[in-house]
Structure formats: C-alpha cells, structure tokens
Length: 232
Ligand code: ATP
Image (cartoon, rainbow, N blue to C red; front, side):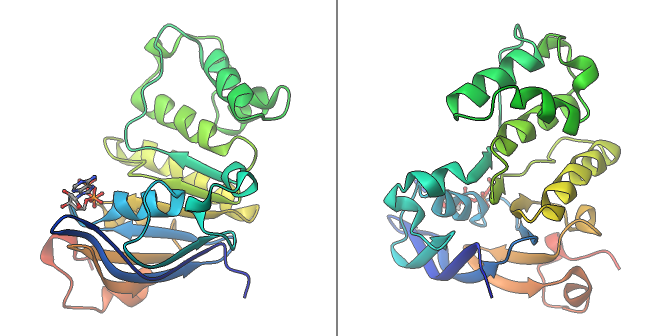
C-alpha cells in the first residue's frame, strides 16, 4: 500500500524525558488520523518529528517516502502545518494575510481567493482579522496550511477553544481535504469530537502508544485511561 506517513518504533528523548517512546503507525492517502492524549503525552513531539523539526533518537520516520529531517524541498512543499497557536496581525485583512503566505510558499497566483472561498471566508476577505471570531481565525490558519494542496496536513490541536458547531465546521473542511486524497494527522484532547471525522485514532500516554484503531474499536477497550476514555 502507498503510505504517506510511516513511523517505526520512533523514540525522542529530551534528557531524561521520553517525549515519544517506541511509537509506530502509518497513514495512507485519504486517511485522517487523530493523535489523542493528555497534556505531555507526546502529540506535539510526534508532529515535530513528522515535520522534520526534531530527529528521532531511535527508530525511523518517513513522510512521502523520505526522511522529513533531510530537508528535501519537494517533501517540504507537500507538507502543510497548522501550529497549536497561530497569531495573525489583526490589522491585516484575511485576503492580505493569505496572499502573504501564498507568496512565501510559492503558491499559485490568486490561490488566496480560492482558499478563502473553500474555507467559507470569501465574504469576510476584506475585513481586518481583528474583527474575526476565533473560529474564523482558526479556519484562516487551516487555509494557510492548505496552500499548494499538501499531500500531508499536520494540525496541532486545531479545535481547542472552539465550540462544537465551529469544530464541526472545521472538520467539514478537513473532510474535503481527505476527499481529495490528503493524509491528515491532527492532535486532540477530545475523543468525542472525532466521531465521523477521523478514520483512525492513535491514543498516547506518557509518550507511548497505548491503543490504535477506529473509534468503534476503541469503544470496546476498557484499559484506556479514564481521562481519555470514550463516552459510550
Ligand atoms: P500538550 O497537549 O501540552 O501540547 P503534548 O502531548 O503535545 O502536550 P509534548 O509537547 O510532545 O506533549 O511533550 C511531551 C513531553 O516531552 C513533555 O513531558 C514535555 O515536557 C517534553 N518535551 C517536549 N519538548 C521538549 C523540549 N524541547 N525539551 C524538553 N522537554 C520537552
């Protein structure tokens, strides 16, 4: 099978701390994989490893068939990333902001307009971001990650702080990316919001993968830590 992301017994230590400890999973085109765990479980470190911003201390990471830390420009261009906290200049409009990122990333001419349409912000394109709601800012962040139609999208806790309706709006766009064949990896604290939105869930605890499966499969696992146990 064609795999966009492959992690093999990956570990990453920071001194004595094992941020990631022997994690393996893979993701094919068109899959949305959620990384779920409490604070400090290792979600951001895994995303950094897939971005090539951190190197594994053991094991291997392949993104689009390459080591992401090797700095291959083709791989970098095909990766989209939404950090946990995005802050845009409130004095710029949505269109100006996206145009800046499209130019920075060498995107298509006028790609910002197509993206604003896609994320449902065309009507607010010329409003200053200072007037945007949190949900609108988060969708703009997603648009920034979608420049160039990446094959792999890495989204770090993209729905934290959004109410349930805004979360579902956000996931609707993620599902569109999935439908065109992107592999999406996103981290989350909340298992219940993933219903219908994630193909598979990887549960992390203290850097280790403790479960991996569809939401239905995970519902039957009793040994999940209570903090992340699924509501049945
Ligand atoms: P959160 O939900 O709080 O973002 P997380 O699941 O993303 O948590 P990580 O940020 O990956 O967790 O951190 C995993 C562990 O590794 C934590 O104990 C953290 O303190 C530690 N850690 C992560 N990055 C570093 C670093 N650069 N230096 C030292 N320790 C680190």
